[in-house]
Length: 150
Image (tube, rainbow, N blue to C red; front, side, top):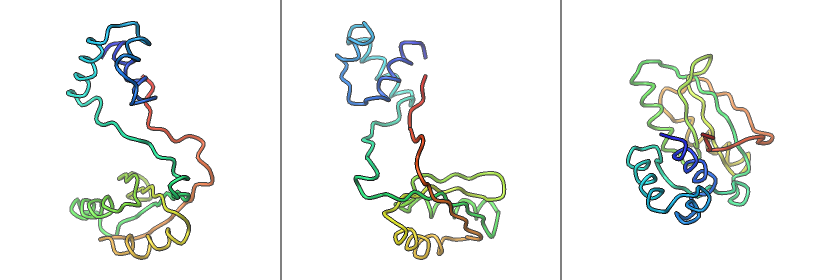
């Protein structure tokens, strides 16, 4: 990956709808090499997807919670089974298997405290090998990005 690839990737991360023609003008290159570079980056898996990033407030997901989970069983099968179940929950936006005093860290986004409570009682509480649950709630997001500045 060279400097031109990095510039293309930075511009695509800012606006994935930017046209090849617009990229060409910004990078002072013809359209064909830019198109070929993007196709190569896609084929190599550097670009894994193009998505629309929604405004969580405008779609009613006003509450973000970070849930620390300790499992009751720490075998590989228990860890895998717990993860397999929770990653299917629509509320879960990120699921990390972590080190430290907890085993997993979940980031969930829901409408409000009532929806959070429903999630905990109806979905998380019945997940296999669930032990201890500790939640923390976001007061504000000072930074929340998907971008990697290259």
